Image 1 (cartoon, chains in turn purple, orange):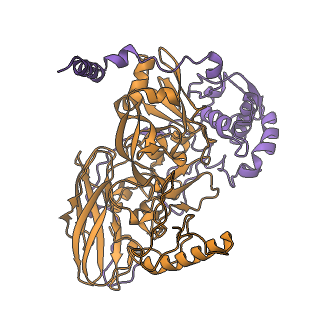
Image 2 (spheres, helix red, strand yellow):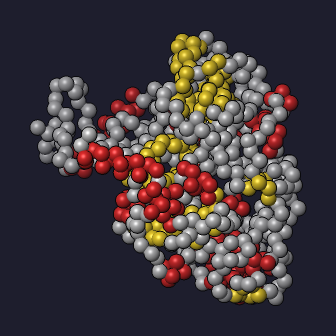
Length: 197
Length: 430
């Protein structure tokens, strides 16, 4: 074995043991505070929410300019999702009366409303709203959903404290599922020789 | 010698039109193989005149530089599900015409929430911050300096098949099952980068964020990130396709497709999940009880017969090789069984090597069709022992609750009815 080969083997075993990963390759660079400051992704407890605030009234004006075309004057939806209503429809097993999932009936955290609106709305100019505008439009949607009062001022400190109606509506993944035997489950059998539906 | 060029004296555009018409007619006559639609396909650029005998004339010249395309006679296309907007939409892989286990990159299904982002790799950066000792940013050049790995994995949208809960709705396997595709992905293990940045002891989750118009975000458990996630810049031997997240996508093997964040620009490490829109209001599974299952990450074992499948026409009794795909987000496929009598009896199919974990696996089953009606089904068992359920078994647990109920994660046994006239149709039989 030549010296070069031995060296290669030695290096390979160091890499395989992960020793290099811990000591650091050192690639890349350290981002500045300013570079990181443009990223907003609040946690459900409110950490990470940016400064700012907005009233229901301010939010109504923004909504009517920026949101109404897709989400409707009554927040009833259209090209965009329906935003309010639907409380009491989630417990259901009737395909003819489907659940109505909205911010009001389904969303467990108000911080998600801020986060999604700030990052992806409005559709034709995503990311164009200011923090204050997003707090305001959040206040408007939450007030129309009768989750906050019409005189609410929503801000960095109180958004995460808004009690969403479906806050406890989620359960962890329990899969893999334990299925009942096929004989004990709904059936849809084709009789051979018949035309299928 | 240039035989494929325009005839002398013809204006280039007119000559080209003649070629297109000629090839469309040729394709129309030649395309009645495995269930291909009979309509004349759109001719692709680079269509060549077809000589009567290809041995009697030189072929078209080899270019000094080129990027090859498939034969002008091949017409498989992804097909878009007609959503309200073409930006938040999905296109489906033509599984019926697929071979082996790899999906051609140009046919890999798409699901995007804000269109396909156009990103200059020379300016793209990945930021890693949050609960780390040392926040870092990486250019694509930086990322490519790290030791790389290549792995073959399927990615499946958790909404694959959502039209099929109540009744057989879509007609072809492309439209019932085409939101799954397999590629060889090349990149840096996410664990390498996380170790480099030093993950804090209380870190439990990380946020992966895309650089598209949706700025798509999902929370991913740190254990999964350290186990097998990949920062992928390569797909099937070349740069990842734009619609798959060029220049950088997160591959989260076996987890629902939308977590494989495309156009990845940021990772933020945290002690709790971020509860983004996509993991609260969207990709959750509302049960009849009114409670919704959240963080239903794993794509469970599933299989489907791709030939014969919906809308195909068999050429009368005789030998057919039934073939299809099986996969599991929990590991390798251990067994696929095929039934030709609607599930009354099952026989083991042959698994085509390689049988890889968290990858499409090709199965084959020889069948002599007697010309009578038959119902074809396949059933997959993965390495954990999980057996692909019937639709009835799924409905028994999850209910049938309309288009906003539990619509994701449909992995039921698929049934294809072969009629006596050889026509194949999507049916429910469970």
